Length: 334
Image (cartoon, rainbow, N blue to C red):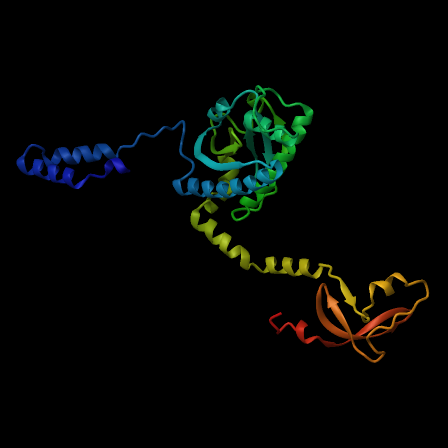
């Protein structure tokens, strides 16, 4: 701690006091031993280390960036989201700190056991609703319970936030969060005993000129099976190795294999004047610039890739690939 560090002038004064006899060495040792005693509250035991708190902060900074992108695009307004704090409290202290009414979503996060809470201040909730319905986003509504239509709008916002939450946690554990229930009164939400420790991640959300908070409450019992993974080293290592996993390569290959692209065979071309074009009628014949024995160019998308010859396959028209076009070879720069 910074309070335990002495400046050079303080060290000089202490040494001079000991040498002059004003302060004895035994008094210094007694004072040093007294400073080692740290107050510990057994009613509020610390369940999370500083490294784990730091990891949770980084995870939810990533979550905040993704949610910021969604809200900015969806609301078409200037949105700013940042992690205001990450602290551990008892569940009772967290519930007592919430306003009534509030917008509370109870989430299940399988395969982890238990539930977590995602709480949104009414000021931000009504600002989102106002923007969705074409308003300016100004918070002119007094705190109250949401109507059915307003709740449907907020459920859609929660659904996207849950997707971002799942993606943000993917480097630590693969979860499939889902919204189980929404409540307005914090007293009706009881996911763990009041004395259990929880970690509270508070995100400050600014939409235009409206400011509010989103609180994410994660009980210790939910995170207990993955506490060893909540370290900065593990989080960074997993995010780096994620791109090199074989299953990721297979997924990309399957997506590329299912991609549809147009395949066009150009039979030939001809140039005519506007006057000739306007005089064309049914039964007229246009002579193309290709011969019967000429190879026809094949285009993949807008790029010439092969040459072919026309023919039939059964009762259907078909082409036979004869060679690769020089400009369509994979070894070329184009």
